[in-house]
Image (cartoon, rainbow, N blue to C red):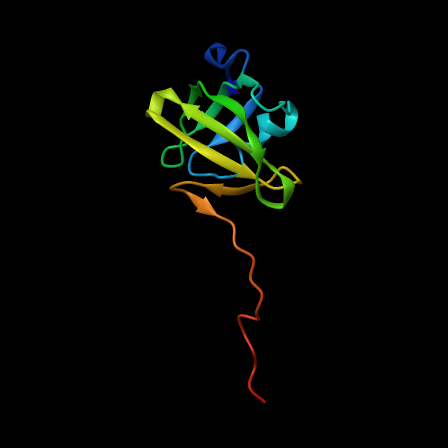
Length: 118
């Protein structure tokens, strides 16, 4: 990794990028290394802050929980100790997040949002 054109050794062993306030980037390690129920992995990431685009190392942990998520996907216990944050993340069968508590919930719209008048 490099930051602003300079080597960033603090990011050594980070395989993934995590964008602050993004519900999608947590899917990278889950899809790269799918786990069996009950298995866990550490997933350190290069964490990019939204406000100033600073880059830090973020230690993260994912554990696959028993049971299925929406649309036969998976449920993972996610933890980021630096933020004293933990939650359950639900993924669909394609590995995309359905729910990220406090950040995002994917909804499926069944009606047209705009109907021109005739």
